[in-house]
Image 1 (cartoon, rainbow, N blue to C red):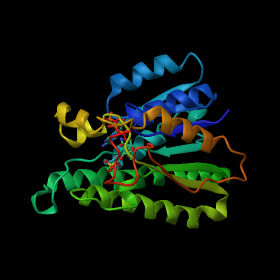
Image 2 (image 1 turned 135 degrees about the vertical axis):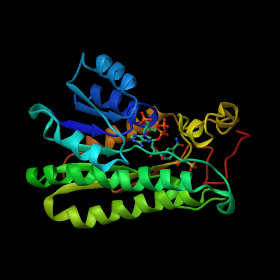
Image 3 (image 1 turned 60 degrees about the horizontal axis):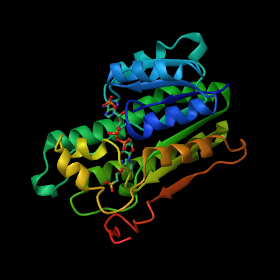
Length: 250
Ligand code: NDP
Ligand code: 8X3
């Protein structure tokens, strides 16, 4: 049986991926900051697979390395890494953006992804196998009004994904990115700092993607035969054409 480490497993895409992986008999290392949610999900999924929880902030490098070093023997081999933890903090023009929001997005979405990868990649090199999936975004392919630093952080994820593909090729490690468009999760609640009315309005008037849609695709990607690497995928709801065009009349 394979083991997957999923960051951001307390909510949205990461949580749905954990549920989907359990259906595919993949053992799980569930990561996030909200321990109560990790424990609840562990209880739910432990009936079908082995589940270990690691509670840490991806932007705290000491926490990242000590958490991953603390893994018990039965979870020490990591076959699949889902670099998913991340969020947008704020949506507004660059001239009114706050340094705190910029720090959060760069520290979590970019540096956090790097810290977790740095802790896991040596295990995959030792195994001469592994599969890393980086969750990017359409914001990593386009820059939309008011998206500035979030878009920058996801463009960085896109570049890191390509860099990993090049550098880890010699070790037989698969690397790919999935770039979703609009997925209804807690993402907009975080972006709008708890203004749930504003958050919900983002997904009104069309059928957005659900986190299960993305989890289903991630499960498809990781269950391909080992000679297949799905390198880069953009996934939109049918109503979405790009970052700014969403058809709300369907
Ligand atoms: P959610 O807000 O529902 O989930 C975000 C997850 O990231 C949570 O589990 C959260 O866990 C975790 N997380 C956030 N900050 C940290 C941190 N500092 N340390 C550890 N974990 C953290 O959003 P989504 O599921 O939508 O987002 C998942 C990924 O998908 C993100 O990278 C996002 O950028 C990307 N994405 C989302 C899209 C969307 O429309 N929803 C579209 C494209 C990409 P906790 O708070 O418990 O730490
Ligand atoms: C999340 C999707 O369009 O809000 O990455 O940036 S978007």
